[in-house]
Length: 565
Image 1 (cartoon, rainbow, N blue to C red):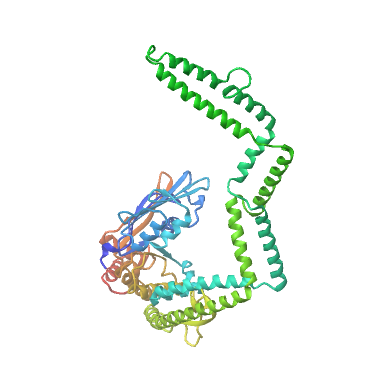
Image 2 (image 1 turned 45 degrees about the horizontal axis):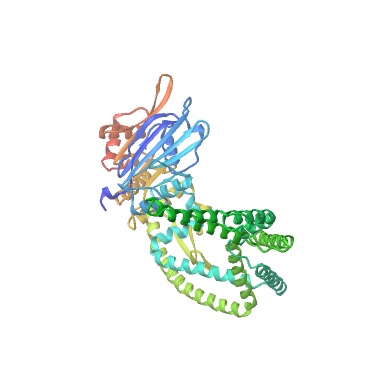
């Protein structure tokens, strides 16, 4: 793997966070350490990264007197997995870069953006989890949660394909179980349900609603309600336009005008054209008159009786809509569903037997796949626990015993038929116990580092930040931790480490120094990359404190040259 293929946090920009006014932090692409005196602002940088990955924002983080704080982080050369996750969530990653930004206001508001697009924190966390992890004295807590142990192991066991097949069968099994439960009521409940479903089907069928029927009925109701008025005016229209017993209708007069124009043919040049136009008018008037008579001739002998029938029909349709669905289509779909359920209940004995056979077939397939997964997990556990133990021994936990226990569940779970738990004994003579009962903060940090080292050969991981991993650890052990951090970095992970250990600082590829100064009566924190000479001087300061002597400088040079103090 080439260094340019690594996921990289290229730049972290911080403005108005605590004592940091305006600062750009540019870590290297291998092992970067941050050092500085207590209170200089190292923890503020880690908190700022926490904001980037979706941790809770507080207005108390804003620099005093300011209205707004901003943190942004630029990642380059993101992995295909991270790009795929971002794309699935609607974030464009063209060019292989992602720019995260978090704005905080003094009113308590917080806005997150990725590549300029405002997004919820849930999306920030999901994408950021593929890019960067922070490990500190308290963030190794994921190791204490046994539910995560199977995730760690499976990442090493190469069982993704089998787990995908198994999970599909698991969901199928759950669906079958649900159907069996639905039809396996007690007899009284089953009888009540059957009667209810039959009643509902009969209720819908007795009305037999049709698409568009309600609108037609409402139009018909309006016509019936105005039948007398419609009849009166329809007769007037018909007589005036087409046929009347007294005088001439419009059609009669137009017809006479046509005859007169015919007499003027050869005398008046346009007479024929005018006659044809009038004939067209006459035909159209006749059509209007006939249509009016036909539409308005309802033949209603008893309007009150018809209105009652229409209202009753409308009431029945409205009742169905209230009970079974807002539209005729929804009512019909509801009927289909309950008819299917009624059928299942009526033949529940036979259907239940079929489903039980189907369930047995699915469980048999699950058992076969689960056994393959179990075998892969146990093989991986045997190899991984030895590798992690070797790493922990190197990190001065010489008497440690580390075991990955793969035990069988009583039934199938979402991850297979296994339970995975990490157990450890850090001291001779002590029994193996869950990590939560025996691991201290320093031990958890070393175990997380050991896991990362174990996985370094397996796959490329993300940017890792270790916050004071050396707390409570001797100089000799610190040197070994530094070696391992460097080893992880060399195998494909950008590692950033906040440290007070000269042994770890000395081995860094990039050394960032965090300091604070007073400007115009206010404290400001700043970060700068140290030159090789400054790097040695800072290591000497960590060794000897504020006063740097020739002895501490010599010791620092020896550490930086690969020696131990």
